[in-house]
Length: 243
Image (cartoon, helix red, strand yellow):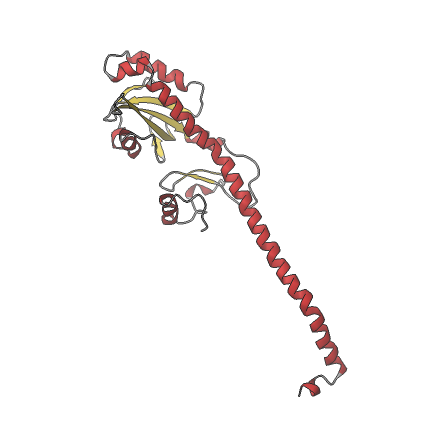
């Protein structure tokens, strides 16, 4: 049967051509797959580099916030206000002077252990509901903390709040310094060039809510993985993951 099929010259030539083309075609397919995988790997590396670079401003801001709060905690005017023997105007002046050179901060506050404001850089002395906030509870527990997305009605803008506990020599928390960070400042910083085409970078709060994004249409989080996956990655301390 095979001999009969290969009888005509046309069929022999067709079979020979197929054999001749098979090897380079196979190599071409393998090369194309390798090239595609290399492009994907390079795009991933580029995105990781960009994300690391873009996050450096936020990391530096957190470090800076801790240093400012620690310096404030040692200031005599602040310490006097904590124990009820200070001049409120002097306390407010110290807070205002501390954040004055930094446009990232909207307001600095000195709060007692119940979350009530002892003084603020703006001079605004109305009561606060900070005592119920998660970031404040973390600070009262003795650790520097960063809030989730917060809209400040008085400031009429969204903020993050960095809270730093002020402790006595025995390690007891006496008060908390709260620094309100403007989200619009975060949005205008860290937008370094080099983002691969059709890619987006998001800065999320610890609840997975988009704070800043390079995608003008991305504030609803439509381009992100599911909230459960993001929260699992945060809980597991993942620095990189696929979704």
